[in-house]
Amino acid sequence: MTKLNPWQFLSTMREVSGLQNAAHILAFSGASRLNLENSLSPPIGLEAASEHAGGKALDEATRALLDLSPTERLSAIDELIASSHGRHDPWLLETPAKRFAEFVDSASSVRCSFEASLHTALLLAIRGKEVLFLSQNRDICGFAQSLAVLLECKLQVQFADPLARTDTTKFEAEVAFPPFGSKPMNTSQIPRRTLAILDAEEGKKRLTEDVLALADALAQSTGQTILCVPDGLMYRGVGVEPLAREALVASGRLKGVLAVPGGMIFPNTMMDTDVLVLTSSNMDGSKVRMLDLSHPSFSGRTVRGRPEILPGTNWARYLEESTATDETFAKDVSLEEIKEKDFILSINRYLLPPAAVALEGFLERSRTIELQDAVELIRPLSLGKAEDGEFTIFEASPADVSQHGLLTQPHKISTLERAQMRKARNQRLLPGDVILSVKGTIGTAGLVPADAPTSDEDGFWTAGQSFMILRPKRGGVSGVVLYEYLASPTVVEALRTLAGGSGIQSIAIKDLKAFRVPIPSEKEAERAELTFKRRQERHAQIETILAEIEAERTSSWPSRELNRDMP
Image 1 (cartoon, rainbow, N blue to C red):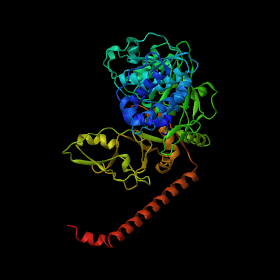
Image 2: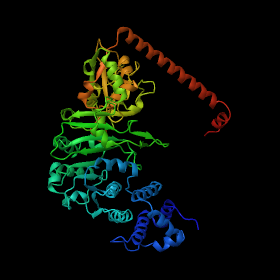
Image 3: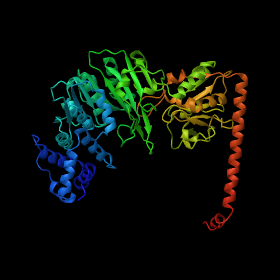
Image 4: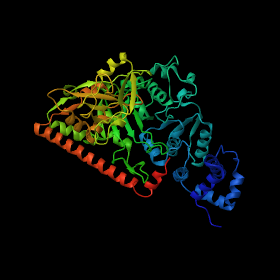
């Protein structure tokens, strides 16, 4: 009979009894052959799995698996999990698991918290380190014990809430992967020193396990902590997140922030994540290394477009090396600069994307002024509405800006009473105004056309609250010139780096006011105006041609016949 190789065997196990039970079967088989102590009791499904795989073939395949080194066995398990399409197992694949293990390579004891840290915990245990794995998932704990037997490594497994700190052993390092956005099962188990960091001792604030894990790390004196958190925690301005970031920066323990594109660590989600590297409490750092792992130096793209870790990269080593001169993907940022940015830790606030570098070079070669000196900034307010209002106005949204840059008649219609009209008139759009989206869809710019209605009483246009109205000052840059600048893809990308705040990002008014605007020469301004006019004429010609094409189509067979029979 043909002998199954280890990977075929693992596939058979998955088919018969599921991934976790397969590991349990393997561990039982391995324990009996290796005479390991504390071997597991025979799992349900072993007899069925043996019969399904063909008795001797199963036995031979098990022996072949055990002939591999523990590291090779773990690779075989990882390959099995990676091939499980549509899986929901909290398992970090081999490459990212190795990157995290490299961070704590010099530590002799490591605490690994939450389900996703299991693969890293096993890698460290195989290397002979003292490792404790903690999880609130009983099945995952059983899975971890099975794999430890199979891999012939010593792994302490504790079924407990990692944030409750019921274990008292001190470890030199910790690797933590709290579930993103998940509510804690029981906040009464969380130590008071952890809750005090978030000013949440009374239990009135909304807490999630990721922000609690950050506070928990700050409450410990562990030599080094590697913590994976959602990117939103780095910039949100609501709830306890700002308190957590401020406490983190004030601690002086933040050594690095590594921004990871969605899908590169967790293949089942495209949520952007950040890896926080904290030093021990007696290491007072004055700078934080910001590193963008989406840069081609660290990642590539798979066939499906998902970012993938490049082989041979070492994230931990790069934190120790001198900063590259290319600040588009790495920079050492002072704590003072972070404080000036209100403790926001999103790396796009510190690293310069290529567009920002190009814009900076352009502005350095130009005569510039701040946006607040070029325009009057008008922030639209909520107008409310009256069902029986006697006045009608049109309120613009980003969808009302045409592809060629002119604002079309807004689709949203509001009816107002006379008392509401005073507020509405203050934010009425006038020809030549530029509207700029500063909330939600950041960077959408539109020019109010010359034929926009200007009535004081009825039918005029206004802007929605996602916009800022930019009204050019007399003697300065025109609306067309300002629009041409703000609508440039390079400038749009640079504007987006200013966005921050809560879940819906927005640009702070102070940052918008200080945004630099170049002053073109008289000839350059005339050329920009002429180019814009010619472009609009071409757009009009294109629209005419498209209308003629549609008319020809509807006037010929079969549309002509079908339209005739329409009721």
